[in-house]
Amino acid sequence: MFSEISGELPDSLGDFTPGATAADRAIWNAVPQTMRNAVLRDAETTLARSWPLITASDYRQYTETGNRSRFEELYFTRRRMLNDLVLGELVEGGGRFLPGIVDGIFLITEESGWQLPAHNAYERGGPRLPLPDNSQPVVDLFAAETAALLATIVALLGDELDGISPEIAARVKREIETRILTPYLGLHFWWMGRGGERMNNWTAWISQNVLLTAFSLNTDQPTRRAVVEKALGSLDAFLKDYAEDGACEEGVLYYRHAALCLHGALTVLDSAAPGLFDKIWRQPKIRNMAEYIANMHVAGRYYFNFADSSAVVEPCSAREYLFGKAVGSEMLADFAAADRATADNPHLPGEWNLWYRVQELLVGTLPSAEPRPEPPRDIFYPGIGLFVARDGEFSLAVKGGNNGEGHNHNDVGSVTLYKNGRPLLIDVGVETYAAKTFSPCRYEIWTMQSAYHNLPTFEGIMQSAGEAFGARDVDVEFSHDSARISLDISGAYPPDADLRSYRRTVSLMRGRHVEIVDAHDGGKPAVLSLMTCLAPAVTSEKIDLADLGSIFVEGAGTIEIDEIEVNDLRLRSAWPEKLFRLRLPLAGKRLRLRIV
Image (cartoon, rainbow, N blue to C red; front, side, top):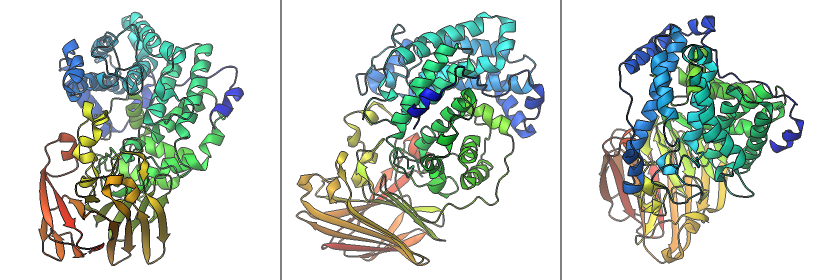
């Protein structure tokens, strides 16, 4: 799709400006007053703070202990502080924040490496080195993000920085050349794509930021052309691993680093070669990718989640709105605009990408449909086997697919259910990332295991990881009165589970109830886990979940309840301090649950 365009590139590629420069006072003065006030308040607070000190010991902590949050808090705090000061200067335009901006720029340019310790490797899955080697830069997600941040600052505040010293912008350009552009053009990193190797969000995310960097700076034409040609190949490698239905296998959280970064990359490319990429925007696959986030929405901040995504996701920003407009999806544009209007902090103080924050300020107030438009009632994504059905009361999702997908949890056949916008059966999500999260020991972590999804276990034997372990014989039906998915999930378990089949049928009987029927044919006894964030009250035939609903049970033995303390900060952003796992032993070969 993209590579075919390489031969059509114009002789001269245009510039890209990631927003209005500081000299465009009329534009910055038009930023809504509430946003201006919030930006200036944050900038003033940052101006009074001390910059975080980052030591070699902080960097080494990841390889020594597996903890990545300590270093990353220092690293991202620097970048957020610099963002705050830059936005304050752009909004105010009086020079008050420039000295702090220069301090932040030089602190970051003097870091030995821009790559995170968790990414400090030269091969995919290779050993993480304890310290960065500044003679051999690694272009990871956040090295590219850092380059984009600094390039955006130079593009928008270049004249003001030159008024202090031309060395500021010159230093930024030298560091970007050495750390990003030279290795990008001269080396192959796994995320660039090669043959049939599977790509993920890294490809679109880094490609967007390298394009943003190259075109925000005053790079020469040979460099621009080389960057574009390489990026086009990478974007094709990224797209090849998406089905035509546009579903993000890494979950809704990673949509913003995957499909939405594809939109960012295309936005830069459009500026470089106006009109050339129009046919890409019109592709149904790109529109499907864009609309995915709206289709995953449940209510409020809740989304259907799987893989390493949380059930609670921050509101949309201007980026989703602009993506909707670019692909001609009024549904997405309306959804994003209305969702953005619910944001507590619309100026995105937690965001480290300056370009995103600039867009947020300059787009102003969006026209939005009120109330927030509802997503389509039913959808099935065959590429990842994801079934979604809704009525006025229930929102239901069932995950088929396989256990070899990006950011995978072993969850083939798991059910997620909301009633009246509240979570009833949940996907727990993922704890704070650590070294173990992306290691061969990943599936020792409880949140990754099928026993902590809404799935059966057979004498302690759980689902296995890998593409070979997946759903079989999947059948989906949607009608006016009901929606149903039936699938055999026995293929997701290893041979020692002694399963001939495990047929799960999940039905939404619209306006009435949800039904889960499990038919088990195997040599070991089955115990079904159900995960909820509501304290259950159990009898032999019914599970009451607080004031939300009840599960009527047929075919189970004595039900047991496990309480799970939630201490992890990432999980606590979505769930209360206790979760509950109900364990239902199948009394025979068939279990029926009716949820009302």
